[in-house]
Structures are given as C-alpha cells and as structure tokens.
Image 1 (cartoon, rainbow, N blue to C red):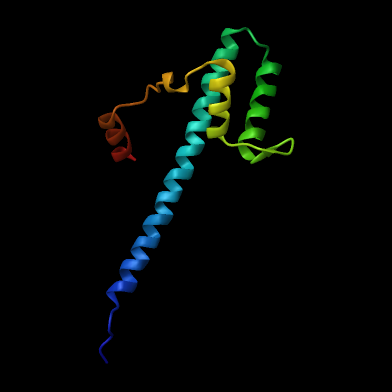
Image 2 (image 1 turned 90 degrees about the vertical axis):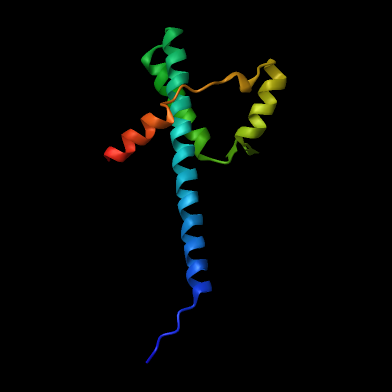
Amino acid sequence: MKVKSNIRDCQKCREQLFQEYQYDVFSNTADSVASSAAAMAIAVLERQNKSPEEIKAFFEDYCFVSSVSEVFGEKITATQKIKEYEEKYDIDFDKIECHIMTKQQFMTHYRKS
C-alpha cells in the first residue's frame, strides 16, 4: 500500500518547531540579558563600596522584580520602566552599549561545543 505524504502537514510541523525554537532562543536571551544587567549593576554597587549584604539584598530584589509581572499591585514591564525612568531622571537608555564577543568569536566558541 502506498502512503500518501502530506507536504503541507510536514511544512506546518516544521514551522511550528521553528516557532518553538525561536521562543526558546528568545527566552534564553532574555535570561542572559537579565543576568548580564544584574552583573553590571553589582559591579557598580561594588564601586560604591556597598556591603555584601546590600549587594545580596539588591540581587534578591532584582530576581523578584524580574520574575513577576506585578509589584505592589502595579503591572510592570521593562519598556514602561525605561520610559518612566528616562523622563523621571533624564537618562538615555540608548547610551547603553554591551561589549560582547564578535560574531567570529561566537561562531568559533559554539562550533567547539
């Protein structure tokens, strides 16, 4: 008996798998960015001679705020907070530049894995 393949079903399955992969990449990227931001904030706190207890308290608060969508009954998003803090403190978040490995370094590192 000849099995009839349905190319559309296969394409739909590939598209769904790719969308799930994109979400996984997005999710992992968000976590990595949040970790990098926390590390840079801690570096600043160290320069300000904050105590280990203050740094740990900051980190715990940072983890709490980043893991929930509401704080004290207020819905929060990073986009909303960026806009609020730019207006409130006259700061420009676009000034942030992350120094990351080059694309070549990235590809070399991950091809070894």
